Amino acid sequence: MQIRYHDAIIMEFDPELWLRIKNKKITAHQMQILSELGRTRSQTKAAANLKISVPVFHRHLKSLIDKLGTELVVTTPNGTWLTTAGKNVLKIYERYFEMLKPEESIILCATPITHNLLLETITRFETTGKKYLISINDDQQNLKALYLGKADLVIFDDPNYAMDFEGVKEDKILALDIFSDTLVHSDNGPDYIRYKYGAQRLGFRFLEANQKRYNILYEVSDFKHILDSGKSFFINQSYATNKNFKISSYSDAKMLQHPIIAVSINPTNEIRNIVAALRKRADAASLGIRE
Image (cartoon, rainbow, N blue to C red; front, side, top):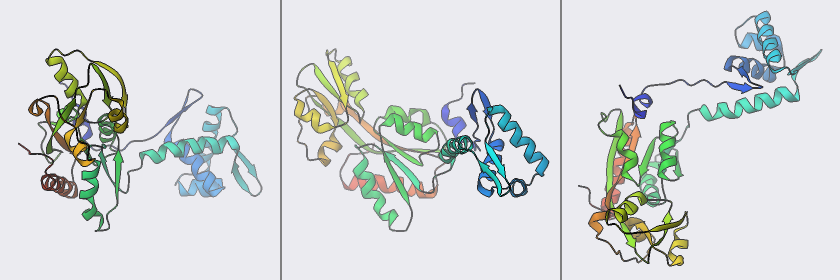
């Protein structure tokens, strides 16, 4: 049986971090020993806080020191202190451990194509006192954030990135069209500059389907650079309209029409309300027609 990514994601996980140092595996429990010792500077207090006996604490600490072959602590009449090596190991662990903590804010991911729509929509939710973090990146990076549990909602420019979420019950995965967008095709010859955002894949597939030869010079994030270059390109109609760029399309708009899709894994009622508000806002702004 083939398991898709989301089949695993919709299950609940409790990740635990371990480090490999000098080809030795350092467990989370061993790092807790070092962390508590660094905080209390007392082996007796650290053992009590971890609810283990002092001899067991000593054994775990010695095992960690033996593994690394480096003195991690110094014991004095005034207590036990971490050495520079001990502090460095603990700092590395805590940095990665921090990445595993769930965000207190609700994370909403978009691209420059849908950034303004998201900002305009989320304002009324922010007035309730809720905290939101808006992340702007390309579809590929936003998809990774969704898979890693670092995004509560992602708005995809390219519907291809949402295909893996089709056919799943809406209580597990919410995948809804926000509006229908169109790629504007500016044809200034065979040399193209690829914009980093939007459903660029569809544009170049369109050229191939029409047996039109093309050459992608490079990819950039700054669309004004593309405009000033005089080269050929594709850009979302909604983005061009929002930025007041007047661009005529060389190709039939219907051939380059595609949905902008919002996806959330294990969506809350709040996320559902945000998606509904996004669709309503898109309609009010006449960004497109959902079929």
